Image (cartoon, rainbow, N blue to C red; front, side, top):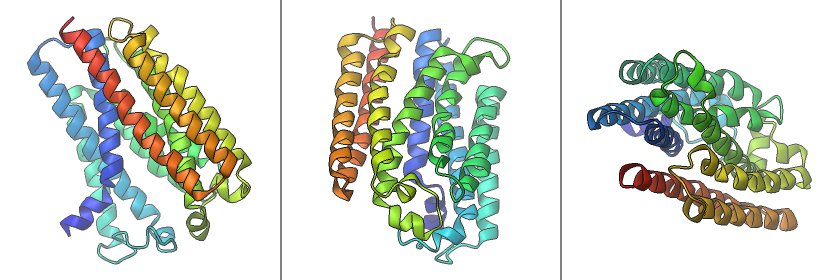
Amino acid sequence: MFAACKELTKPGITKLVTITALVGLGLGGLHYGVGTYVDWIRLIVGVGLGTAIASGGANALNMWYESDRDAMMKRTRVRPIPSKRLSPRFVLLFGLAMTISGCGILAYTCGLLPALVALVTAASYVLIYTPLKPITITNTLIGAVPGALPTMIGTTAVAPQAGFAPLVEPIGLMLFCIMFLWQLPHFFAIAWMCRVDYEAGGFRMLPIVDPVGNHTAATMVVTSALLIPAGLAPLWITPELTSIWVTGLASILLGGMLVVLSFRFAVKRTDRAARIAFFGSIIHLPVYLIVLVAEAGVRGFLL
């Protein structure tokens, strides 16, 4: 049962969401200045634990909502509900308890605004993006919003402004844009590779209505290219923490790699080309974030 519950949380997605929230916390904390090491520990534990639990809960609710469609697709028919390892009622209660608990931890350790961001993220993922997947091909664009919002869990936890002002704080918006853009070539590559499965599940994905791949390829190339200026934004927004020779170079090289791989897919339109672009996106984001946070940490703590 533990293994099935763990599967409900989609550990890979939960890990990525938690990391992006911690990146927002780290960059925002270094920029604005977090008072003491005790404050850092409280915020890191609170943001990390609260985000992970809330994200895991939202993923479980997504599996509960889509269980009938999951049963129609090869890659998802072994999930806990379709395989009858867990009941729909249990998954619903598990997801709600996890989401509420995660938001509660964030409210207690970091304040109400980060908790509100986490709640909006979960609600928009489960109540807006998930129901739209079988209705409109714009679901990927809409789903990229809750996918990018967790960066703001971290930035709102340390932003000094009062009220809702931290929601339009430049560092949070910058990281939101990076995450939003990155998801598009990443998920369109997945959608192309799994287009037959998605069609069997009744989902309206772009590659299903675009069988030649013209729009899919163009979207991947354009959004990959936009990641380069988005990745350079820290040079202007947090100039004391970043430089053109480290973060800037990482954005140019990694973004250029993803553009090349997306263009390669645009030329070939094969599953193999889409898979290579997908793995390129998996390399792009963690390496870029590691470089960004590492340089910011060195400059913030040591220089």
